[in-house]
Amino acid sequence: MLSIIIPIDIDSNIYYKESIQNFLKRNDVEIILVKQEEAYTRAERLNLGFHRSHGHMILFHHPRSLLTNDAIEFLIQESEKKEKSIVWGGFTHQFDRRHILLQWISWYSNVIRIRWKGIVYLDHCIFFSRELWTSDLPVQYLFEDTELSIKFKQIRKPILLPYVSLTSSHRFLKHGIVRQMVINFLLKIGYKLRLPSSLLFAIYQK
Image 1 (cartoon, rainbow, N blue to C red):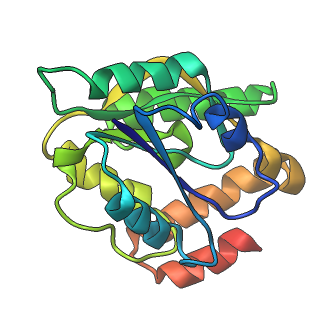
Image 2 (cartoon, rainbow, N blue to C red):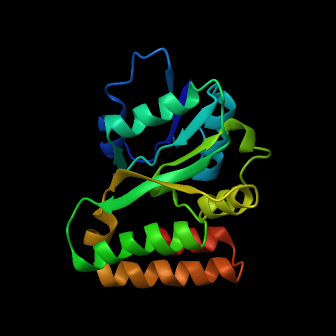
Image 3 (cartoon, rainbow, N blue to C red):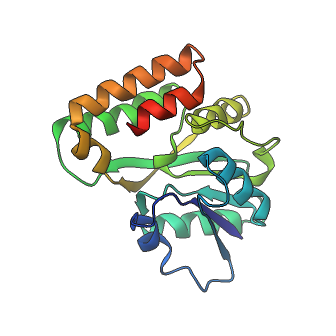
C-alpha cells in the first residue's frame, strides 16, 4: 500500500485535491489529511500522519503541489514489489508560472539541493520506504523537511524522479519574486545559525 499524507494548512490550496481525486477509492492507496486544527506546526502534522499510516511506501504530499497520476502510480507499483528496496527522494520541481527566476529556483532545487546536497524540500513531495522512519520529526516551525533529509541521506542518497511536482508560485507572486528569494535566503542563514524556529516562522509568515 501507498500512504499519501497531506499536512493541510489553508483549504483553498486545491492542487493536492487534483492529485488525489483519482485515488480516493483505491484499495492500494490510503489518503491521510492532517488539518492545522489537529497540530499547528507542519512537522507535528507529518508525524501524526505517519503514525496513522499503514503503507510500505509513504508520500508526504505538499498541499500546494500537484502530482500526475503516473507519478503516484509509480509509487504504488514500488510499494507492491515483492523484493522491496529501501528508497527515498522527491519529484522534479517546477513552478506553475513561467519566469526566468522561478525556473532558476527549480533548477537549483533539483540539481544542487537534491543531487549534490541530498536535501529534498516538501514541495518536491517527499516519498520514502517505511523502514527509514526511525524517530519523529523535531517539532519546529520550518525546515523539518531539511531535518528529515539529513537523517535519511545518512542511510542512502535521495532519488530525483522525472515526474513533475508542479508547485504553486503564489507566495512569490504575492510578495515579489526577488523579495521572496531574499527572505528565503535569510531564513536559511537563520536556520544555519540555529535561531529559534518560531522566530524564523514569524518572518516567513510576514
